[in-house]
Every structure is written in structure tokens, then in C-alpha cells.
Amino acid sequence: MSDSMRNLSYQGEFVYLHENQLESMSILHIKDEFGERERLLSLNGEAREVIRDNKNLTCIWPGSRKVVVDSARQNKFSPLFVPDDIAKIGKFYNMNLTDGDRVAGQDSVIVHIKPKDQLRYGLKLWINSSNGLLLKSNLINELHEVVEVVMFTSLKELNKNDQKQLITMPELDDSFSLIQYHSGDASGNLEVDMTWRFSNLPDGFWQESAVKRRLADTEQFIQQMIYTDGLASLSVFIEKQTLQAAQGETSMGAVNGFIRILDNYSVTAIGAVPALTVRRMAESVYFKP
Image (cartoon, rainbow, N blue to C red; front, side, top):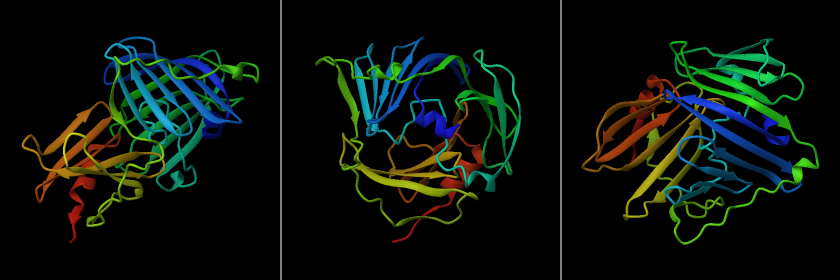
């Protein structure tokens, strides 16, 4: 499935259920000699368009005339999950394969991915039995509740002639405001301070990346460290404490967060993982001069 979602060209429409909201989206994904390109369009609610290529991820809100540009590898705008490192998943998850039913008019097999502890969510994936494309996914929390659903209503693999469809940036006039820009080459980032350490990382999580950025409207810096177990991921943000800073748990659908104040700094751990995991991550942070 991971190979197919990255290396095949396809077009389809899917629904995304999260936080008691139902969104409908279309996707066009092209893989050719120029690399991988993708366009996501919202079909209900506020109009928005996401364009991803080998370098950048651009999100456009035509109604509010806003644009965000970020690194393509930090693809947080798409609900379609494609894991990076399959080999490591088996250490912390049990997996089995069963026959599936039809989704979007296509036959499927089902992959059940169940965590071995309470630190991560499970997944149930419906995968096209012939070409390996994802047809449906359920994200399942530690209480065995389905907290997010992605399901294609139509999906077709594109041939070489179909792949000639162009994914181009729409014309943006002066009325659009750039509310965030981060070049995909990461040249604007600084090395993260190594004085921040973790004493007790949740089992199986390792650091995937770490960056330090200057906030646009102040002279302050914010540090972000991304941790993953190969399937789940979460971020830790460290910044100077503000007057509005609060401590404790927060949640939004499948996403949990925990904020902790440490030596006049605000430490925030957040991700689509159980509340126990983000709390343990935030509480393990310490400062070593």
C-alpha cells in the first residue's frame, strides 16, 4: 500500500470523518519522471486547495485570501496516511490480514494493525487487492473507538495518457496574504538547542527531526522536535512562556496535547496518540546547561 500510494498515479474522491465533522475531498496524484505531485481540493465547507510537490506543500484558502507554504515532507494537511518505515512497525504492533468487502466498487483486503500497549492508536486498513491503493482507513483509540475515518467513494488508477494532467499553482494576486512561509530546503531553520533533553521517552519513539525557528512577529525562538514509532507521530514544541500559557491536557478528536511550564518555558507535546503518550513525552523534558 505504501509503495502504491507513492508510486502510482491516481484520481479519486473521499470522505474524511473527524471531530464529528464530515469533509468531502478530491485528490489527484501524479508520479512520473519529474517526481511526485499531488493536489487536494475540498468539496464542502470552506474552499481550500493543497498542492504538494517534491519540495513544498502549499495550502490556499481562496475565501479568506490566505496562503501557507511549508516543507513537503511535513504533510499534515492530508488525512491520507502513508507510513514511512514498515519494518519497525512490527515491534510495537500486531498485524493480521483478512478478506475485505467492497469499497468504492472495488474488492479489498483488510489489514488490522493493533498496538501492543496503551501508548499508540490502532488502524484498520481496506486495501485494493489488485493494485494496493488505500480504499478506507479507521483510526482506533485505546478504548477501541473509531475516532477518524477516511473512505474513498471513487478511485481510479491513471494510465500514462491520463498522467499528462498538469498540477499547476493557481494564479494568486496581491489580495492574497502569505501567513506562513517555510521553504522546503529548510534553509531558514537553525539547529535545535541540545540543552533540552528527554529522560523517559515513550517506548518505541525516536526523534525523526528537530528544528529551531524564529517567530515572525517577535525575536523569540520556537523549537520543534518530531518523534515517531514508524506509524504514530507527535511533536514537542518548546518556547518562552507567555502570559496566556496554561498547563494541562487538551484534546480535539483523535489529537491529544499536554502543556507543561518548565523554567519559564512552555513545553507542548501534541499528536494523534493517546493522552498518556503526550503527557509522558512532555513530562520527560528537562533542561541540561
